[in-house]
Length: 394
Ligand SMILES: *Cc1c(COP(=O)(O)O)cnc(C)c1O
Image (tube, rainbow, N blue to C red; front, side, top):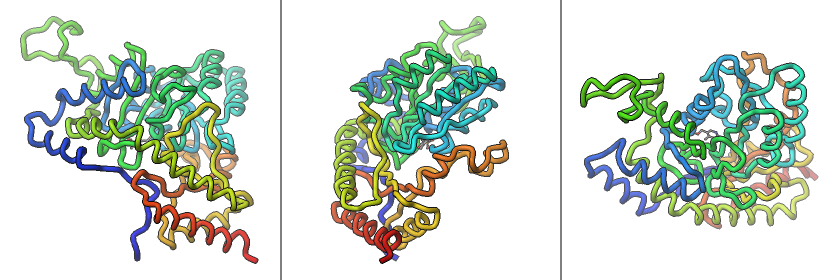
């Protein structure tokens, strides 16, 4: 079979390769200076004060929850339309997880559903400690409204911006944390920029920064000024918390530095590709794309279509048609609460109807900066053929 066009793919060029090779030829492969340089460059880019790079965004989400003090008796809410890491991080902390249904027009957390759920939770004495809004596809949630509700109901905010570095909201870069406590990026190869595996937490809160830094490296500090006990000698370091090895190595950092230089260009290209798709969709009656939040500039990690008049069968047929015709479409995401692990926690079908309906009327088309014009044309041609065949059979 011909190679399929993937839904996402990294963009690696010679400067990236050279940077990585240089690190491999050097003396320091981990815990070196490039880590700090990369963190500082991300701070400058996204207008945050503090940055902590980790071996994955999943690790960063875990540490973010811990830094806010999420524990056994706490409740965390997120969106059911996300990668499982957005909710697993709460479970790692033994917290209780719950979801807020999406707004069908954006597939982002619904502000009205959130408000209704918060009012009920307040009456029941079950308010969440943390909300994790997910900037699906790279488009910011309505953070101003979420922040208003956070002030009213007293929850903290961790943005899962795994898809969204390079985007902005109300002219602030995603990551500025203007409306949140912590913001998380992923540098997995399918995301906007890559460090092989990798992630990052950014914050403007010094205390959160120290806590995440400590937990990233086993809970160990080597800074004498921070020691709890008197130092018995120059060999001494101190473990003060039960931390992890979630470190980010120098190869990752060097790649991050070269990739970050290209961030704006990569995101511009993604927006151009998205524009092509939107223009194409104008002529197809049942094809739509997700709406953007007011004031958001999306990084467009994903190009998610929405099908009018969709049914479970038609959606599945079109999905299979695309894959059979060389286009590796994918659903982002099958609702988290329908995963068997989550059903064992007592979630069930029917709990979040908008999310469930989304999953049988949407999927992602290929979008990545190296997508060729001829490939994008092929995607559009196959999509039109598939829709004609399945939705307009006469
Ligand atoms: C990719 C992703 C993650 C996890 O990122 P890793 O770096 O692979 O751990 C978390 N949340 C969302 C929404 C993601 O897409």
